[in-house]
Image 1 (cartoon, rainbow, N blue to C red):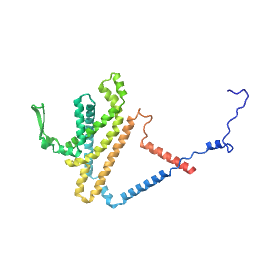
Image 2 (image 1 turned 120 degrees about the vertical axis):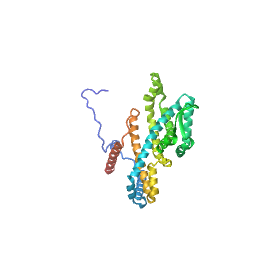
Image 3 (image 1 turned 90 degrees about the vertical axis):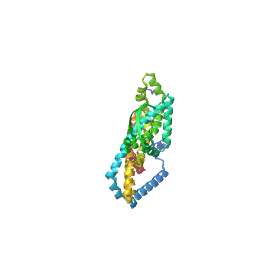
Image 4 (image 1 turned 30 degrees about the horizontal axis):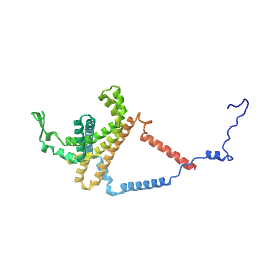
Length: 326
């Protein structure tokens, strides 16, 4: 109801001691005390400090010898072989996984059966067995030929000359990787909402175009985290190629450890640090790739590590000010 002309309107009174309810609402809200969290944090920090102190001060680790071996040409040559084997196997394994996943999702019972059998077999056989079998493959088939099935061969070649140590390692790791990548890709494709398939089909788009431009980009949001786990496992799995006479990072350190028995621990630490560096680089790349494909799927992009650090420091300063004010 409007006030008549000339009438005065009373303004609300400011909170004073005469009005307890208003005084309470004007008080500062204090954060809830959590002593258990602070105690757990202190315990963890003490344990971490003890671990770091033991790691640095224990003479058994021989950090001076670690520094000597870390950038030696022998170690770097093995690191280069590890990177080459990982790169080739990752690309070939992903391509093979996509082909197997599409075969598994096809309407052909033969393709589905062959794809399922391959995945079942390669996931059941240990990787070291696959590598050793391929390394001795020339004992079973001395020559390989291309021609008409059950008919004449157009040409043949010596398998032992073609299958070098690098080729055996890449083929073995790629065959194993394809089996796991197939399930990762298949799961990502199945995670795409069925309505996306129906909308693409309603527009009359070709099947290949639907997969490349609509289904697969959306499936990548689910594929990338799982496949990066496989990729990290592949980086560590390259240490097994030492058993097929390929001196990768682990093989080089193992060879040097046999020559210098007193440096076995520093050499193992060198291998450990290099694997940590490689997996960390892959994890950083994974973060930014996931952040790229998160556009349009979330309300806001995930903060970068630098943004998280800046926000954490700001929150810490604000908390310290509140504690000092109390």
